[in-house]
Image (cartoon, rainbow, N blue to C red; front, side, top):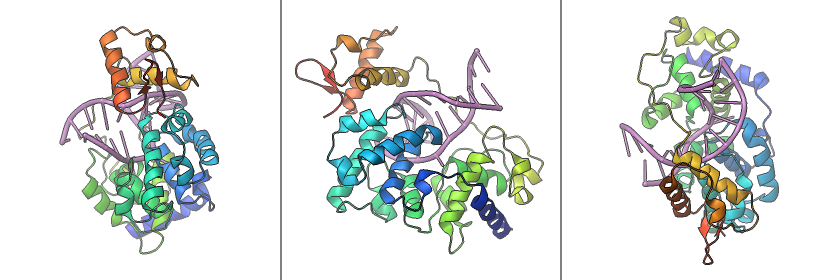
Length: 288
DNA sequence: AATACGTGGTG
DNA sequence: TCACCAAGTAT
């Protein structure tokens, strides 16, 4: 049965897939790597413009490695999780120094790079180099949970178990197509909130649908708060730096906030992370 | 294993 | 309106 599921999935992908720049034939390993980092926890539509500008400015790892961390953070704009910008640049430095400027193709080598974990290492190895590895992101976990396991949600992730489950679905050849198709299905059809089961190419094989789409009964992650958190505050502080081409005074960073100790703590954490650089004259700048 | 880490769209 | 959600990683 999984064979037919995979065949129907692949057939669907060939006509339903979105045309995305990092899927183009001329998108090399560096472009794929940049896209994967930007897409971590970030919607495609928000990534598109930043991705284009980034690659135009830094078409190679060496080009990014030669520029400053601050420029990377500035170019990152409001994509979110700006530490990713720092790590992507560190990644470029490591690729330049350790791999002669070429993005490595080996999963273990990719995982050794800053900001690259289990998912991204395999995504690059598979999508940029055509290798056969399971690529498990939140979309794939959800699709497998429903179509194979017959449950409405994926539940808490178990990296090892998830990798093994997806590995079993991959054909001897054509693994990249199956992986990207699983992700695309999860993004467009088998969505978290309101899955479009009537339009699903593998509905006939779906264990969850076959069981009558039973509601999820397992454990759920605690909803993430945002308003009033350090996370929000850090974003507001960094926004001040991004908006200025010059270092800013300490006063400029005294943005309105109900909790002054928290504001100071947030600033300190940004400095500790290397996202903000305290200069000798008492002003603050994006890192050099 | 649980938690921190941005931002903005959406059902 | 307001939780939920989005191609995760590091600690």
